[in-house]
Length: 317
Ligand SMILES: Cc1cc2nc3c(=O)[nH]c(=O)nc-3n(C[C@H](O)[C@H](O)[C@H](O)COP(=O)(O)OP(=O)(O)OC[C@H]3O[C@@H](n4cnc5c(N)ncnc54)[C@H](O)[C@@H]3O)c2cc1C
Figure 1: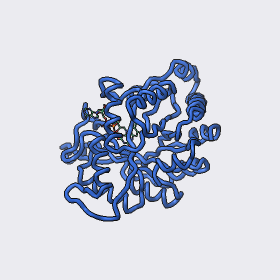
Figure 2 (figure 1 turned 30 degrees about the vertical axis):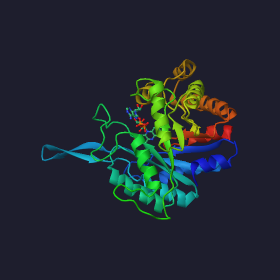
Figure 3 (figure 1 turned 60 degrees about the vertical axis):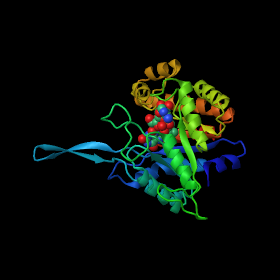
Figure 4 (figure 1 turned 90 degrees about the vertical axis):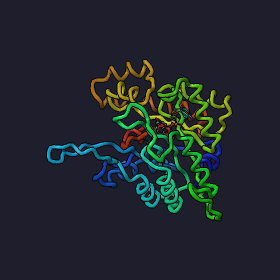
């Protein structure tokens, strides 16, 4: 079922959902299940599964370094299939521009369709670790909007190199990313919103936001988006702070601000157990206010750990 249909069926009730990250290559999927199991009591209608970009590794071959590409956390689609099978829940694989040619993307979408996956999240992906800026993969897309276009073309039977008349067309519901504090490369929030509008105009059905710690930023973002004519659901994505280092790491990686009160509370903690509690309490307050405001879904970035998300969901749902 499509994410937008789940939202409609909920008739204004806020739904619970979360995002998981595939395990590092070589780890067992059982570990992942161990983190999903405790969250299923909150009845997520869909679970997102991220895709990681490939990275360079340098292998020592008789004293010479051999540069190879590898993906540390493969298996997004396999995980989607097994989660759907095990829990009878919809899954949303993240599909990236970076690291994929358009043809590979087409085959991935065909696999999704065969597996009965109705939703995909269309993302550009970040620059590779070694690169300062995002560089499109040869034969791949430059922007998420190009990916949205490809998915919607495929929904109409327009494959890359042929048009196929069929009554078995895919009908993907497409999610895209939005940034209440603007994307790090965008010159202004307004120009970033114009890019978001372009993704929606090309057929994106809903938006999931980057994490934020101040709800005001989300509410203002939604107001601005609506003024610009972006009328699809805008799902807030949130994450509890879990360790002291997040105070530096999250702004550095995601370019998000952390409110002074939260910084003070975290800095006042004696250890990370206390930080975790502060993060959970902050996230509960955020969630309650967002739910009160009638957001369609509260989407949690679990980062593969469920204990804090469960503590939050217990208070909110
Ligand atoms: C909900 C969510 C889930 C995510 N999941 C993943 C994941 O699974 N794996 C992963 O690697 N990353 C993930 N990311 C991170 C994401 O890939 C990065 O933030 C990436 O840098 C931008 O992706 P995008 O889809 O927003 O890109 P885009 O929408 O393409 O935007 C990228 C930048 O280009 C600008 N722009 C867009 N179109 C144009 C244009 N035509 N001309 C000039 N500038 C333009 C935008 O303003 C923006 O600054 C996720 C992010 C979010 C919010």
